[in-house]
Amino acid sequence: MANRHLARSIAMQSLYEWDFWGKDENKLKEAVAKNMQEFGPGLDGEEFIWRLIKGVIDNLAKIDKIIEKSAPEWPLEQITIIDRNILRLGLYELLFSNRQEVPPKVAINEAIELAKGFSGESSGKFVNGVLGTVYREIGEPQKDE
Image (cartoon, rainbow, N blue to C red; front, side, top):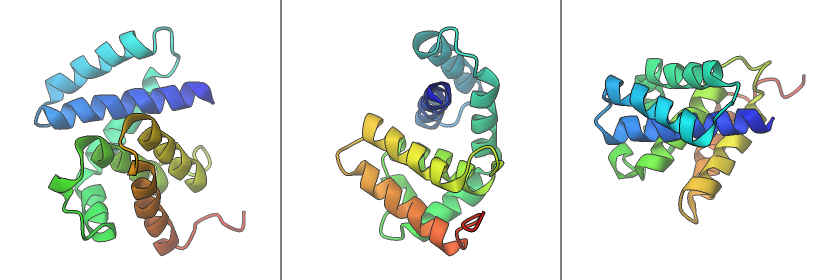
């Protein structure tokens, strides 16, 4: 479990750098390699990290539209880069990943923990609000399972 959280942290930090540097694919590869070496030496999670990153990037337009709809008072450019990428990662896991592997509540809780650990004081509540809104709107999948 701790390995998955660390892998999400590395994915989020790498997405942050990718976004900061203008979504440069080459910078992303460098960022992942650097972050793996610095924060996850020996971590058996590189495949999971790349699956998260690729999932976010492949669904970026859809995810960003969902963020804009779910937080209309916060234009995407005004959301801090860190919060924006935590939301992207959380929404990818909530909406597009394998729900047997990552149940919706786990996706939400992991994103909140990333926000609490890496962002500002109110970021956990902001991330919770956006992801909670999306979760309720999609009808709380697997609620009865």
